[in-house]
Image 1 (tube, rainbow, N blue to C red):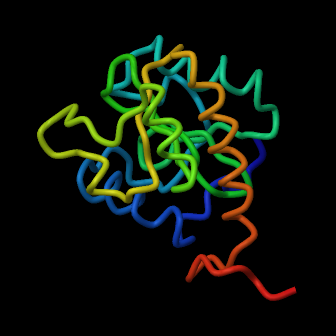
Image 2: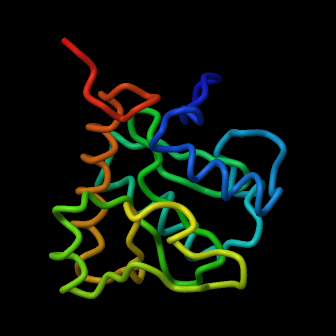
Amino acid sequence: MSAELKVNRLHAANKPLWSVFDNDYRMSHEPEIKADKSKVREVDSADLNHLWDEIPRKLPECDRAIFFGVPVLVRDTIIFAYVYRAHGYIAYRSLHTDQDRFLEKGAFRSKNFHAHFTLQSITSDWLWVQTGDSIEIDMAKAACEYAAALGKVDPYTTRLKSL
């Protein structure tokens, strides 16, 4: 991993995550640190290995990062997947037009894994899926493509940049 930051924490697509991860958890005072498994806390090792080892084998264009203490996958500075305290589950960013398809196949919008955190506290862009579920790779690929598209928009408004 290079010394440059992988996550644009000020991008409108990432700001809600920054708010929750930094303000609610105070897991790390650093916005991003080198993706080192020994620096990750409160995440099941099997979930972390799945997120950082198995998924990137199928999505080589993604990067690993730790964003305010939470392990994430990133493409073009946009977070598209993360795992935190949700043993056996990963959250993926999902384009609204894809959500019904994923929901019909077993993904879900929210699960209160602990008292202070639900997906509604972030945005409606996120769906959870059980690790290894048959739809997970499709969700990961769609999330990665969505992040690439978001990386091409104005980072402060999420409107397409003019050409």
